[in-house]
Image (cartoon, rainbow over all chains, first blue to last red):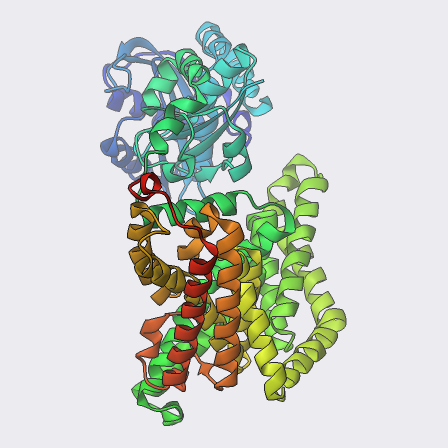
Length: 153
Length: 468
């Protein structure tokens, strides 16, 4: 699964201001809708919320990977946001979240693509250089470049 | 270089299984240690550890918040933590695993266990020591046996109502026979499938099963099934290991390319090349067995009987047992009778010997004798192993002679056994055994011969040895 291929610079938000995880996710879904990835916001948001309800997606290192498989999503996509201020995500390591990857996959997609994307990102997060590069990326183009390193690994 | 293994698993954490795996791999790389990590996460089990890898490993790290199938690591040093620990402190975990000594856990494992457990251990040790084609064949046989046993015993249950009761459609006997026949129909299919599975893992299963089903359909029987299993397994493994495809096509390999190509090749081989000669061979074998004179039948019983006792649960024993069960599927019931009688006598004979003599067995062995009796009556030949292992030169020949006599007598008495297992219990089912009374006589004579021979060969123990 080529992750950088399903991202685009218009759904990469650097310095997104949000006061809660709900607000952060909502802003990102808005972006996905504008870019034509999402047809039915309500349905997709419900899927994300349902997943968050089952257990946190804050996997540690200040990163959260919320995700939803829903027929509100038209095409697989990944949005990224660096938050202006950390928000609480009830994370695994207790730290608030500053980086959010939001994964959307259409319901009709066979298999578990959303999990594979999630796994690829979280594996890469275990590498310090990846975390540093992601933190230091100044433009959406930089972020895309960092993400490409997942696909190449 | 020390080799480490790890398993990571987490039931709820979305990605912790994989993060823990990655962290361990990184930490091992830093220390220049080789590690393989099995992940049990949201997409199933990946990178599964093999038996050989476990046997070779210095230690195993289990970073899991759920069951990680730990039985398989019995006797190995294990470091056990939650998945989170591996993410946070992978370095220390690697150090801890490297510092484990093989003896640490081995010592706690070898505490004196009771008799039945000991038999189990000897069995599993022996299967761990198997390698190559023989291991694959045994693996296929071990998957097949439960099917044969279930099916055979259910058919035997239908005989409760009379041997031909199943011909009356709609009756319970008819239903039981149908169930049993379905099971027996799967026998060769499963044998072939799991030989291939043992060789090539999952990609081998489909072609193996299909090859086995073809073998049944073509009348090539278990001989054809063994052949198709090996062919499918080695071909699938060859494709798996040697066929390199562009990355985009690689994921199609296990689900499309290997099963398709292997099944096609195996199927065509079975239908056009192998099927006919093997089915002729099977027919010849079946005809020969059906029309065999009494003298030959007794000779066959003697040989199969001796085989059952040669290595008790080992390859020679399993060869005789497999032939016996396979022939049930061809409606030939005499060899199975010889096989079961001969398989029951070694533990029973040894048990009788321990009961009869005060001087030749120590206290522990006398206790073991009681357990051996139960195992023998249940047709678990392995019950004799601890005695055989302690004193092979005297015990094994005694067992072989007793078993050969039991097998030969069972044939001479014209006993037939329509179920592939069950020991004394199957004899309680009317009609499952023909000539039940004489069958019991054959077993009893064999067991007594074994007992007498053991007693004659074994020397008296000293007073000190007796109380041990």
